[in-house]
Every structure is written in structure tokens, then in C-alpha cells.
Image (cartoon, rainbow, N blue to C red; front, side):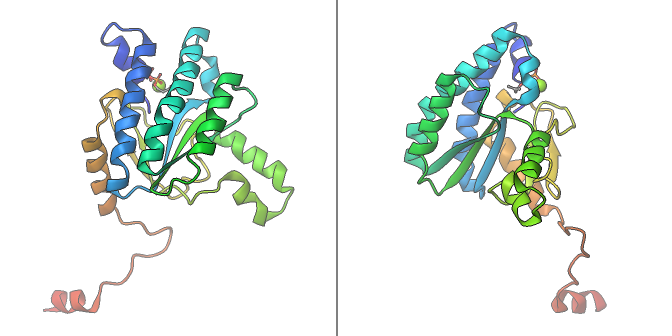
Length: 222
Ligand code: IPE
Ligand code: MG
């Protein structure tokens, strides 16, 4: 969800308003996602490196996240969306932590879409923690990093072409899409277009492409 700040600055608005516009975008994308075949959607809301931002922006983001969780819980319940949060919890302020726990508990039964908000998230930190937790046990390592399947499709908005410590382990075979569209301008139509492109990509996971079907071979030979 990159580009909120630039979206606001280009309108001579405070950056916090860009983040608010970004929250609206997320609401619309979450509504559109199930119809596009998405079952898990993980969004990068606040990276562990975002603590380096000015205190007023960090505070605004934390308040916005707590508000988002509160205001979206009824919509999630209505739409069968399970909301959960990944990332470190020990540095969140108590109000945000309480909002996280409430939203997770109330939406636990959602089965149409699993919406995961990454807050105080660092993929390298998650990997390091999993390594410590699993104590050399390879079978326990991966489940300690994630409880969802690997990432199929990864989209970064806002024009940058890097992963910025997001889902590094889970994205080993993800199809990557970078769009210059700033997150507040990203629409369900943008997502639909990218999903269509994703469906045209040939995913081989290091193997060879499957041989053509007999019918196709016959057609080529003719
Ligand atoms: C979004 O946008 C996401 C967060 C980190 C909260 P940015 O705040 O990074 O926006 P730009 O990149 O400055 O435009
Ligand atoms: Mg940015």
C-alpha cells in the first residue's frame, strides 16, 4: 500500500490525509477481492522500519489503524472476512493492541477472505524469530513463520520496485507486479487487470512447463 504520502503531498495536503485515503482504498479492495478469486490478502500497513518516520506521522498511522480495525469489524462480519494482524505486538500502543485483539476475536469465523494487516512487520525479523523458536527442527521452522500458504501474487503500488522486507520467505515463487499507481488511486479495476495478467503468467516453480496436450500436438503437426 505504497504512495499515500506522495498522493497527499501532490495535493498540498498533510500526509496523514493520504493515509486516510489509503484506508478507504483498502476498504474498497477488500470488498472486491473475493469476487476476483482472492482468499488471502496481506497488506503492508506499517513496517518495522516505519518507526523511523517523524513521531506525528507514526502517531497518526497508529490511530488510523486502530480506527480502521474498529470501523471495519462490522463490515468484516457482514462479508465473512477474517481479520488478523501479523508482526510484532510488543511495541504497539495499548489502544491499538486492544483493537487488534478485539477485531481478531470477533472475525475469527470469517471464511470468504482472510485479510492480514502487517503492522510493525519485518520479514527478516519473522524469519529470525522462527529460527529461534524452532530450535533447529526443520519441520517446525516454516509453520513458525506463517500459517497461510505461500504468496501467489505480490503487488507493490507507488512505483518503487523492491520488496522492503515484506513476506520474503513466503514470496519465494510469487509473481511480482509493480504499478506506478499511488495506493489511494488504486481501484478494484486496477486489481482486476493485474489478476488477469497474473492468470496469463506461466508458473513452473523451477520445473519444466507441462508437455502440450495430445490434441494440441496433433494440431501443430498438421
Ligand atoms: C504508505 O505510503 C504506506 C505506509 C508506510 C504507511 P507512504 O507513506 O510510504 O507513501 P509515500 O511512499 O511517501 O508516497
Ligand atoms: Mg512509501
